[in-house]
Length: 304
Image 1 (cartoon, helix red, strand yellow):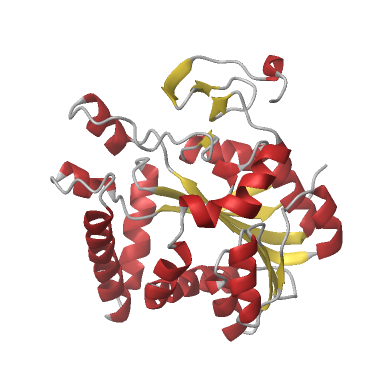
Image 2: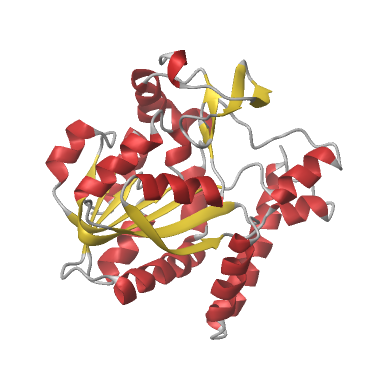
């Protein structure tokens, strides 16, 4: 475990032998004690897709049309806002590789880095350019520079998010874009469910979820590491189903049903030509701190 003197703050929740603290030094909530890099590398290289998410790849493929719609919206933002001259993309934690496939179709030079052997092998078989390793100072030296970097649902799993973002900064060309998505935890809807309706804080899941962000803490973390946020939006506030009586916690069939309704809602708007309403709504949710995930796109600024 890491040096406990570097982390201090009030305890906000506890689970599975870990406390979640509002860390004064880090500026966001995280578990304490923090696992070592070696412990985490073992988990994500060998166990994550077999023990924790055994059907993750299959579900992603089942939802392919929705993911392609989601990722095309993200690439459209890149293409409309990039000031660099290239189209070289890195996806950190590339999983089954769907983000890379969308990038390739849009004529990006797309590369993924994925620590899990099962997910990396699946992507390589699909003809994608994948490095099967952790993203760290060693692997970063092998990757080169990029015009855009995507990192979806990764920072909540790492021991030192600030160090990872610093590495991302160094991998980007000047003016490059960084798209990051993390769970929006201890959100207003979650706190209503916990404090008013008696739900246990199911989103607190150590040791796999180490860090717990919201819109404010994520923006501050990016700013401290040389980025300026140029766009932020939430993802669908899936907790609304819990508030309406559909308890999907621990019930995969109910969870998939709720997820399908979310997909139907979003696809209907986009396919009808009203995708701008989706963006406007999710940007509005972000301003209220509501939504299951924080999605931010930040620009690399030149450090003084």
